[in-house]
Image 1 (cartoon, rainbow, N blue to C red):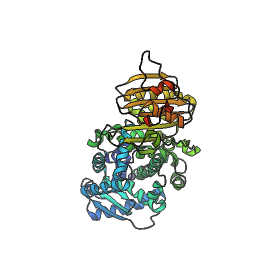
Image 2 (cartoon, rainbow, N blue to C red):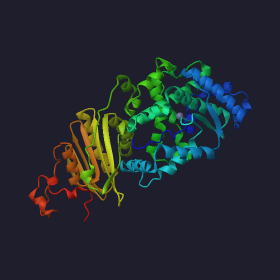
Image 3 (cartoon, rainbow, N blue to C red):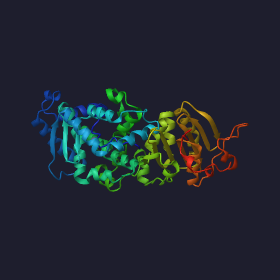
Image 4 (cartoon, helix red, strand yellow):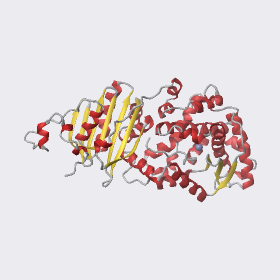
Length: 479
Ligand SMILES: [Zn+2]
């Protein structure tokens, strides 16, 4: 997954509210029971009320999750400006400007964000708009927005105080970062943190009923997404950002519900001891239980092959969640979901040409069967055609598809259970890449009658274009 929106991510107001709505009467009754004077329900809390409510909710969350409070917790009410300042500080600490630029360009290369999208501004806006409360593991402090009514605050407290309790027992920040540099595994751990806090919040909302999440037979958290899109910033957000923001909460809640199903909260420490290794395990909790480990996939060194005009911006793992998002951009959601589920490991790299800011995207994807690799080839060919409006020189063969675009050549090649892509480069670069993989040379375009050979050397070495000189491998070979 090229983007980390997490940790800066605090509490999605609309999501929380839809959870409350979903648990409907139950939730309302739980809140009524919890809120002392009903009139205090609609206005913001005073400091004293806030502290008293936080202490009460903290005790309840400790009871629900079985996690004891080990040290007293700092807590405070914060204004919107203070929360905004925190969000910005947090963003800068999580990744530096160069890393955030790389994330943005990678998402752009995959077609997940429009060109030139201002991700930093968007994130600050969405987080400031959405945040209701937060727990800062760095200072071990719990904040809540001073503008929300006390009844909403309690629900947010239930979520954030779960983070606080988990932090005291499992040191959540270090635990999550231990997945680095694997972005996919880090997102999976984020889903554990957010999902368990959501599950605890659901249990909190159901407290007065004597039931809990594990008693709900076929609970589908997807139903909770409801009117998330109704918030102004999320409404205009690219779908990828919306999905990435929501995934740790909803995907994580689904995962937590599956994990807690039989044993309840006693199962939680086990998840911290043996974290899910991929978003695939979050999306399919059965694969977490069976311990399915994805194949380790690596790209060959491409720096030399592309020449010194190109710098590697980013290299990482998309995971099933990331590929599902990519496929969803160009195929319908059901097909994207099915195809992404065949994911069994990947590696991608994004290169940027310093002066022109052009990008090359290289991916290597391992599928769980040859049959699925064939299906991926067919459907991703279609996706790539949709991604590039202007195409020429299309070459279609059973396992190989390529065409030219104003931004360079696009190549998709599959062999056995693997597929590779290269976008923004030329055929020579692509051939050098597959040669590094020890793959057979991809099918050549048919000879055009009367066509003048591009280079004299090519007429002498028609079968091995890579041998015709190494200097011209760089994409967009300048005129
Ligand atoms: Zn949270």
